[in-house]
Amino acid sequence: MLRELRVRNFATIEDARIECGPGLNVLTGETGAGKTVLIDALGAAVGHRAPAELVRTGASEARVEALFDLSESEDVREQVEALGVSTDDGALLLVREIGGRPRAYANGGPLTVGMLREIGALLVEVYGQHEGQRLLEPRTHLDLLDAFGGEDLRSLRDRTAGLARRRAALSRALADLDQGDRDRARRLDLLRYQIEEIDAAGLREGELDALLEAHARLTHSERLRRTLGEAYEALYGDDERAAIVTLGRAQLLVKQAAGWDPALSTLAEAAEAIVGQAADCARDLRRYLDRLDSGSDSLGDVERRLETLRSLMRKYGDGLAEVLAYRHAAAAEAEALSRADALRGEIAGDLRRVESELSQAALHLSRLRRRAAHRLEATVARHLADLAMSGARFEVSFSVQADPDGVPVEGARVAVGDRGIDRVEFLLSSNPGEHPRPLHRVASGGELARIMLALRSGLAGSAGVPVMVFDEVDAGVAGRAGYAIGWKLASLAERSQVLCVTHLPQVAAMAAHHIVIRKAVADGRTRTEAERVDGTSRIEEIARMLSGARVADTARDHARQLLCDTRGREAVRARGSVRRRPA
Image (cartoon, rainbow, N blue to C red; front, side):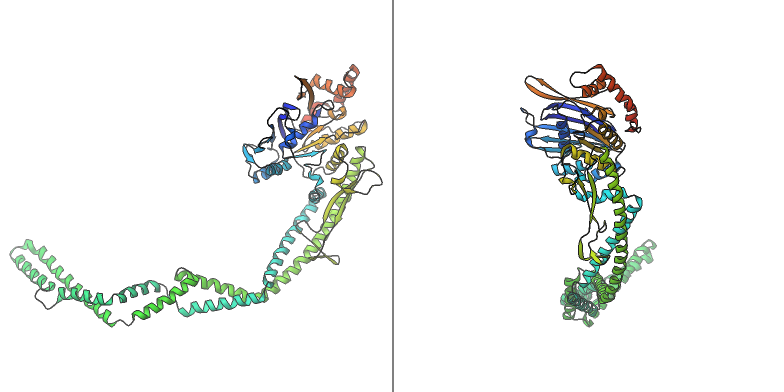
């Protein structure tokens, strides 16, 4: 709900602040005091059009702040947060600056005016002007009718939506299969060629590393043979200077010395081990040289094999593992393409079954909607009669759209979506003899506000915004119709916060919160001021509404009686509405 509205330098308002509460809030005051200006300021705060001409003369910019409490509107809070605005404590402060460089903020974060309008549409509806009224938008009418229709209708709508999504998915899958048999055949030939090419290579795990080692060895075979041959000769040659001969002589001398001094036995053993290691090294060198001379792979063979592997890696992956993974994926795709005809038959069969179920569900849903529409038409008609518009006629218009690719319904194919086959629009004729027309084309001002009040009353219990604002809803109305307007506003205020600009004392007396708007002139400038009234001051305001500028004691008594008849402000504040209807 709206907690507070702060307005600065907006039209005739220099600086005004109003506090609102739950239930029904009324704004009263003499004609021209600036009540509608405050409503315009609230509209600006939630993204409605706000031209620079609204900036108060002499000021550089206007500023409007609207503080909302969303702690009891969890669904709205989730939608606001989905738009990127955090509301951790349930509070949402919207700020709009007009004139100069226009700016908008939500909880301190900058917004575009478009984003502000999107958030504002979740929070406030203003009845009495076209801007900001979701009820005037045909795209909302089907959802409102379904909400009015009850749980069975909504459950069938959910089932219909699921079937429609399933049908769309099957249709896309079938279209993908039918997109081009030639393309599929070309793709299958390519996959089979690639699989055969990879299989023909006979790839082995670790083969690439082994080939790279062999290539390095064969590339340097002559240097290896010469270098290691010299090492072998130095270690185990026939020359007396060969290392093995010298080490053997040293080992014998140390062993002879150990016979004279047992303490040298450790050195004798070490010398013997060195001779053995040298002999082992010489034998390993000989074996390596023999393998080098007798190797069966030529450098050319190794290079050709490496080029085969590298060619595969250029096409299918950075390594042999990736090449083999590509081969596996290609085989799976080829298998799927090979069974495309069988798959097409399966999908087509599923599609026929789903279309049949969807056709039945959509037709049943349409029938339930038409029954709900008859109930809604009768309900709204009663509310219109209560509001002194007995000659008005409300209708729910249904239509379907022919579509050769749609679902069959009663011998014709029609378009279908998540919400079924129906296109719904609310129509109204405000005067006898006129054909019903779309809501956005009916009369404006107070008449339109009363139509919206009747429609909202008829849709009681359906999804609505947290704050509803009615401006001029009582224009041209008096007496018993004024009481009816008050009762309906109070009833709506049980579910949403209601702000109402009114000239009727019957409506003002039913409010939980009463705000008086006054116009004052100081230093040659007109100012609009707002004051929340209670007790005696509220009686005085209602008495003024009853009698005019000169308030008589009889008017005060009448004002007290009105407040008494509505069971007091405390009852209104506690329940948001008074349930006892006037006699």
